[in-house]
Length: 435
Ligand code: AMO
Image (cartoon, rainbow, N blue to C red):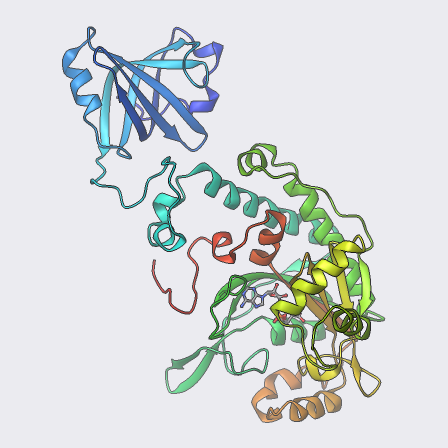
């Protein structure tokens, strides 16, 4: 065979009728009814029927029908219109080559009707991803990330890449992975927080990064990963956190709109996209607590919202007609050390929630070095551990702010996926380190 593939399944049309073509892919199914056999061949675009007739060549027929399912083959043959074939065409094989034989039994079915456990699927992710509905999630993921670049470039943001091996924890908490860095101890970045802020002192006054978050959180939930991805953004010369929130809601709307253009994938997933209207509702933290308490929650002022409170708030807000809403004016004690205070008790920190799940959080930051040191100490951290970060605030640092926006959380909400592990290729959670 000269080339293993001259056509993809879906590209075959009336132009190919009566011509010899080569198709290649995975053997999804074989139906042998004695004198005739139908081999369903799958490639990245879909499936195509290869129809083998015993009377044409008994030898070729026997070899073809005995290929184990999910083996990779290339078939050269005559392309013909066919009313009975799934996509209107079939290939009558002249010759074929087995490029890779699949072992039997398969650890996971590709087109089986029975649903497999998520763990079995993740253990065999390379087969799981052969299913078109699973591939659709990642094609849409690719599309929304492209939309991030498109939108932020149009808003004059510069894409940057900052280190993931760092000397002090980025979020200040204990949920940090330690590692040996030659003679020193290093950490995996919980976010690019310190670096994106340092960049505000450079004149690159609008930056973003598609970032990796490494978080040593012990809990195993359906909305947490230990390694996740996020859109991280920082912008200078803002007059308040509102400037940041405007960019974030514009970005979310653009991503939603662009995802809606992936009709084929959305059809496979049975989803319809309704683009949200702007501006998103803003609800003050105090009002959130009131709403929650009125609806039976025992949450106290000053506490951060847990999963249950977020869900309850999602229901309350839905009744009021809002799927997207910002929680604003958080108490300072519920926010990280870099958050700009507002008066004694409050802060300029916000969360963006979508249908009961936090998808982003951000704030205006402290740009005064003395206040920053005070807040570090108040949060139980040692300013000495943050010296190289603090230095960037001593020689001219403009007012600035930004946000971190979880890509997997976004996909969960966009596609109504219940478990975040479905939204990343090879999830890392409390117990999973392979594949
Ligand atoms: P925060 O910790 O709230 O803020 O994270 C920002 C967003 O990242 C996503 N996210 C996660 N997704 C999956 N699994 C996790 N374990 C996880 N942790 C966070 C969420 C969340 O809203 N530096 C600040 C952001 C900023 O102020 O710029 C930060 O990291 O969608």
